[in-house]
Image 1 (cartoon, rainbow, N blue to C red):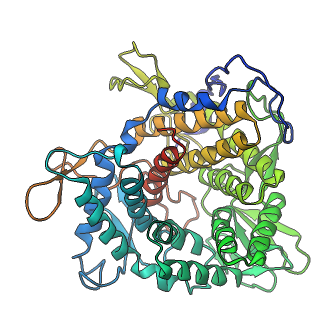
Image 2 (cartoon, rainbow, N blue to C red; image 1 turned 180 degrees about the vertical axis):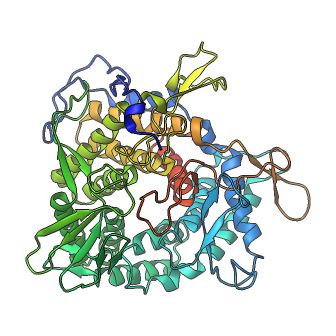
Image 3 (cartoon, rainbow, N blue to C red; image 1 turned 120 degrees about the vertical axis):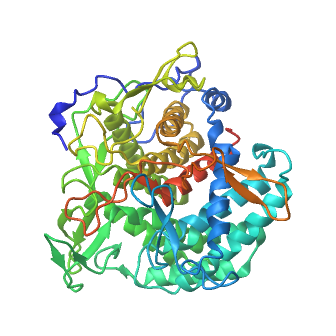
Length: 527
């Protein structure tokens, strides 16, 4: 790749939220919150309506997930038998090469196994709770799609119940919560609640009290580093913040406060070990005025005294860079932690990491922007009268500090939609304490990120249901043009020392968090 200096830094500002309504009222502030005018909460619905993202709710989204789920039932490499259990899960969709457009599967022990069943349950939830936002072509009935989605959701979740007993991974939250939480909440399935309860017990075994943290990895073996002694090292990654939701959720359902205490302690520890203060940054009017933070990926904590030994990266560009998905995990993880604890220190952390994310989007090199003739009529990245639009500014580079090839900037679309989910949770949190103006900033930013991600990264190869016949079928919108994931331009791991370096593909958790984002807007009445 060419050096970063080959791209011209952008001078665009991140102060692109909607202008506030002319109304002031006093609010109780958290640390250094912006003192700009507040906007009545009643105006938020129209602010999102103006930036509506209809592609989130199109038939294409359901059809693609449905097709992969149903076709794989009869693949002996994926299911033991058509009525058996899954032995492989979708992970990536290459954008080129001999398998371009088709999902590549990983073993069920891999940390991403919960996202595909979670996507199925997320779409099922949408069909049950928000039927007016789901529509299909002639001959395809919602009730029929809903029924088959439920059967597919149950089939793809079978392996997750046994996963709940695993004590070898901190990712058990990612594995069980996306699907089993919904199965419990939608259908009252006691088996799913038992599995969630078992999973949280498994996760709690990884807590190291002297370090104040849950061990993420048992070992770290890369080309340039080897860590295997657990008596001297506690390896913790920033992703772990998003597994805390499992602990808080199970604590609320079981009444076991010790589980929530572990989660809160872990989150407090990472404030010191994983957040890096970023100073000297001019925040636009209406932005968060407190401390801004970038994040590191891996921290090693001494289990004897709890001190930080060193910081590292396994998936970012280098140890000091700002890996975009790690930053996104922090935004979502700390926003969720605040919603459970109502501790302002976590809200400040979420705001500080979110504002830094927006700063890096706004100041990315100008080559991240591209002009398209495909005018969608959406005013986010251009006026209604334009026949050309500029897109790409709000789709993050895979690492904000990595060198950039100006002809083809490497992105991570999953990082953007994860961050957008976190910003919607921040919107909820800030509205609840009367910080309407800052809430609006993060909501607007979240919508801009997802709108831009769809403009740049939505696979043009669409899918649609065919209603004729005894069995519900899915076909390519354009015959012979297939891409099985919803989004392109994900980057799983582009670290130069990674044992497997792969990028620029569809990514199962990019699709999952895109579906989540749509559901969050629906739940809040904002779509």
